[in-house]
Figure 1 (cartoon, helix red, strand yellow):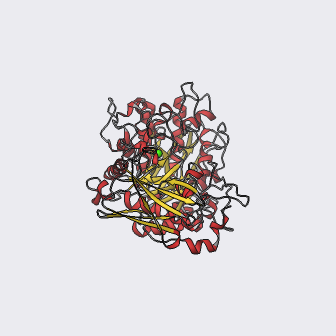
Figure 2 (cartoon, rainbow, N blue to C red):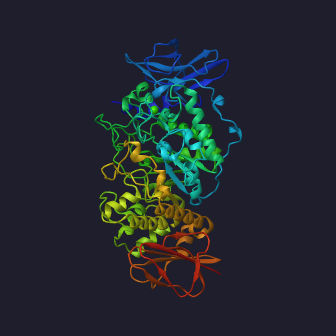
Figure 3 (tube, rainbow, N blue to C red):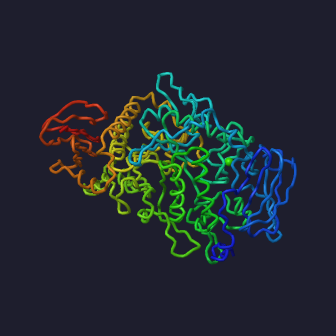
Length: 636
Ligand code: CA
């Protein structure tokens, strides 16, 4: 039905390239531009409030057709804080739609708001800069966090429970002294906080925030902060100001901010603003007029259409410019086309050279509307060298198959060849050997937490054993070549357990008592030990460039298998100019002796300890305890 949208004729006639879509505010007047090439008539409704259904219309302004299928109108006077919608007539069907380019909205994102964005800047925003700068993604350490999970439980001691502002409370601690919240994550040594969706999503009613829970992979307004994370979802200024406050505070604490962006689909296909204004334009459909559904969420974004591509490129640039965002994680990026990603990276990097990009490059069954279009899947990694991908090979090798959560992985006793482990440690995947393209992880929001995945594979394992196996996974993953990534709380042996004792593998709408980070766990010795272990590993990684190499040839040359290791032990030698590092893994339960090459070796990781300081020295033979990693360094 809508195939003509992808035709050359349509695109030539109706591609608008200007930068002024949406509402452009000034004290004297506000200028509106909307792209609606198939509309016969468009009006703007101005409202006093942002609440749909509220009968507080101020005025209706006609729009006039302008270039490339856009419509324009100018409203005189200061409209800062005035809400608006578009009334669009397409072939007699009248739709009242939010502005796809809305920068903020009222409750539940139904009405856009004209906004003087400068007035939402927190103190010091002019001086706000990204605190983490490197030319290599491998220098970064990413921690994934859901805004609400950080502070939804009382044990966080955070007052702004479940809100953006909860991330600005950095002095909270348990009675026993352990810091909670962002300070805890900062102390681990992470460089970037990757926030799960914080744009306006639809699955939680903003009128009753705190009642329902959702991860938020159901976009409604792509350029608007989610209302349930603000202290007043009815007021369009508040969500913008508080999200900026959060970013500013994270920056002041030395942490970069990454947004999880879900451009691959929308919440309800035909309720999405652009699909209301230009019927079906945003979403892919096949020859028969059936919606493509590679996302398994009901629709796939037609990123190949010129005005969808522009919309996504503009949106990412907007978050980087206006909110000082330091990185973007693209959900199901395999549904978007390579050219869109290339354009995003080049346009953002022009102004912000250190912004990072990565995503889920899985192959999905989508119906692109233009033939032979390359998609941003792992196999096309070579086409987007500044874009990194989640390394599912590392994940599945370590913890076991993602498709059968009872199967063990390397850390839970499955046999894995040393050659395969070497490839994992070297970041040498079938789809890329570039370390800066490989995001190494053993847990993220999807599927079981690391703790729970081990417990599913080994139902008789006691907590102490699960902790040992978790640390083994961390040592391998966080020290491997590539970009280390983990789910917040992995270092606290995070568990998502129901009251009946079942582990939840897909907690996208589970209540807070399942999803919330249980800070009281920091009182348990096993957890404290594991937190210190993560700190030690990340510090070690930071201090030894051999763990952060970026040239694949150098990686192959410098990282090799240590020969002559006993059965069951896999060990690598990292050979540098000034030091040699031996990294050994023992996934068996019994201790084993490793013969070290000649010299006096400093041990940095052994049993349940990891440190950037030498723990003790050893020559000749060293014991590698069961279910643990061992790292020794010889200075030249
Ligand atoms: Ca919302």
